[in-house]
Image (tube, rainbow, N blue to C red; front, side, top):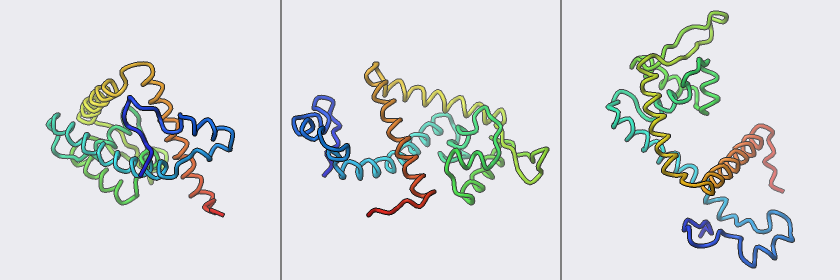
Amino acid sequence: MSNLNWDDDTPEPGTGEKASAQAAGKPGDELDLADFHGMARLIERMHRRYLDVVRVGLSKQGVEDIGPVQALMVMLIGGDELSVRDLMERGYYLGSNASYSLKILVDAGYINRAANQRDRRTARLQLTDKGRELWEGLRRMEQAQAEALVRNETEVRDLKASYRTLRRLDRLWGDMIRYSCLDFD
């Protein structure tokens, strides 16, 4: 069972007397592996839940011709003009899934996909007027979510700390894959 604590009234794990004794040790001494495991599973579950939230947002906007994955692509493109490669790197999409989603977005009129003037082999992506309208609606939805989540300065700091931790985890996992440092001995 994880020691993750979701109640606002009780102290965070590792803040009691045991934590004081462990503070003298190395940083990993107070790490509960169940918390790490739980966080990894929570990330995956939250992504699925976020897709559900986007699906509801699309429905409220009357958008029925694309799904939440395509809507996230619209969010990633935003006001920029991106290459397909840039979009894939920003969103961590697999090639065939990205191609399929881009085809849906082009066919539905949300993005323009045009050959790059300098290198005809690469395509440039940018939102159409319909895509920008959707993008603005999705940004309003995210703004409302952020305002509901973060109500005071303490919660702003907590959100920033959570983001920093997730970014560190992303870099760690990326480095482990990139540099084959999966030696656990």
